[in-house]
Image (cartoon, rainbow, N blue to C red; front, top):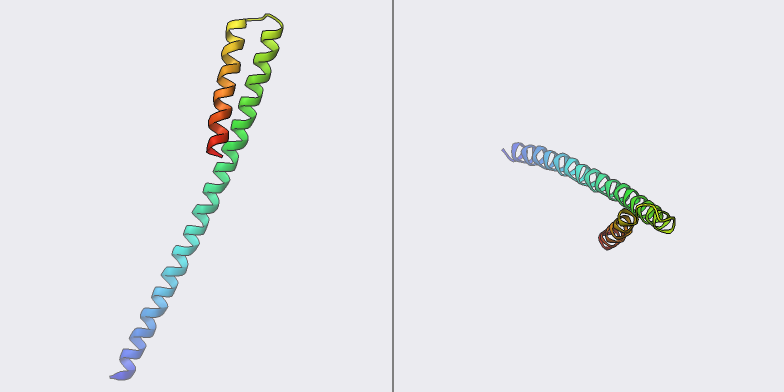
Amino acid sequence: MINLIMVTQSLEEKFRDIVSNWIKSVEENIIWITSMIKDAALTIGRASYSSMIIIGVIMWCMNIQKYYARRLIYGGIVLALITELLA
């Protein structure tokens, strides 16, 4: 009777260890994927606001669509603030 209880506990402990290891692996992979998505979003955001501001300044200096150039600059600044605050 004692051997049966020990075998049952041993199987139960093995099962719990397997499930626990599997959950830890899934958790680590989710953290890794989230980190990669965050890094990609930051890179895209930085490229976007940089190009918006540069294009806006060039358009404004050349007197081409000053209204849209100003909106590009303001939009780039707002996007820069949001992106860098979330970083």
